Image (cartoon, rainbow, N blue to C red; front, side, top):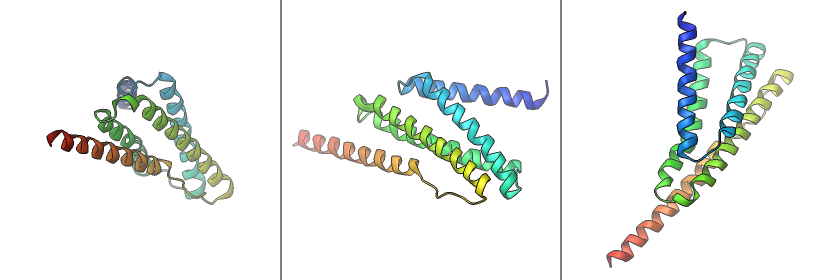
Length: 157
C-alpha cells in the first residue's frame, strides 16, 4: 500500500468521524452529510477544471489553501451553534438544519460560479451566505446572552 492510499483512507476516516460526531451532536440526519459531501466533491472537481482552464494553475498548494479555507469556513457556524447549545438548547436542531441548508446552497452556488467561470472566462459576483448566517447566529447569541445576564441580575436583586 503506497502513501497516497494510506493518506486517502486517513482523510476519509477523519471526514466521516468528524461529520458523524457533528450529525449526532446537532441531531441531524445522515442525508445532510451525504448531500453536502456530494456537493463538496462536485465543487472540488469544478474548481480543478476552473483552475486548469481559466488560470492554468492547479498547483497542490493552491488546492490545499482553497480546501483549508473552505473547510474552516464550514466549521464556524457549528462552533457558534455549539456555543448556543447551552443558551438556547431547544432550538439547536432547527439552527443546525438551517446551517446545513445554507452550506448546501453555498456549495451549489460555488459549483455554478465555477461553471460560469469556465464558460465565460469571468467570475460571478461572490455571495457570502456563510457570512450573513454567521452574523445572524452571532446576533441571536448576543441576544440570548444578554437575556440570561438580565435574568441573573434580577435574581441577584
